[in-house]
Image (tube, rainbow, N blue to C red; front, side, top):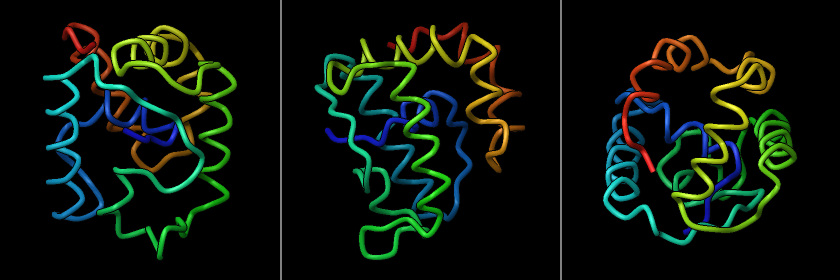
Length: 130
């Protein structure tokens, strides 16, 4: 599975809200799939990924917020440092190195979903999301 680096964070903070009904349904299915198959192979890519397929900001494979998401991807990739692995390994690295540190605010603080994601911090931390 190919994922944008910043989607390592978004997937773990997802609470059923999204850009559109189609995007939300797609994200719900994707998060459920990863929870059921934590050994799923993931390759991080800086471009449209499987999650972007149903995003209304995806314009023929290019995000209409390309600069913003490129900066998010670069920050996550710089911190996590790995381009591929299992969902379990990459999501754990993102949790430990970003979501549970001050880097969460530094990286995601300007995102429109930050307040919602911030409010889910305790609930995701208690789950066994691998």
